[in-house]
Image (cartoon, rainbow, N blue to C red; front, side):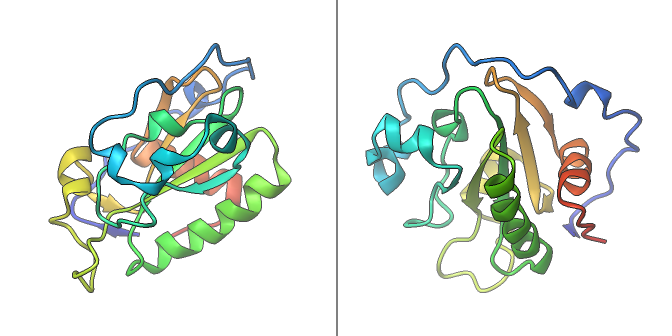
Length: 167
């Protein structure tokens, strides 16, 4: 794991695990920033049926609001990654496999790196907007679309689900 600062000690992950319920809906109007991305042109059906979806694949480093692309009724894992981070790429592969075998999960990825930066892009607009201090950085949303964990607690949960440890 690549980090810019230390994390506080995690005391409990119990709050992350909740009963699976059906979402009443998520998404809504997309932001102006999202409109420039190819993912913003996907139909609601395409978004809801995609277990794994790269949100800014066509414009890396562009901020995107992942809440507009969550799958209703599933736990959604959002990975903020850099292609220059080996742990990021390993988690991405593990998450692709995990969402193939666990239908209650959906994965969304956001590339923090602008195309011209050939290392982890700590000055990226995505990093600034999301206040990311380590890569990979995860957010986990419950089936209702509520944020259940982010940062270190989300990383711990993803490590448990994938069986992969970044360090």
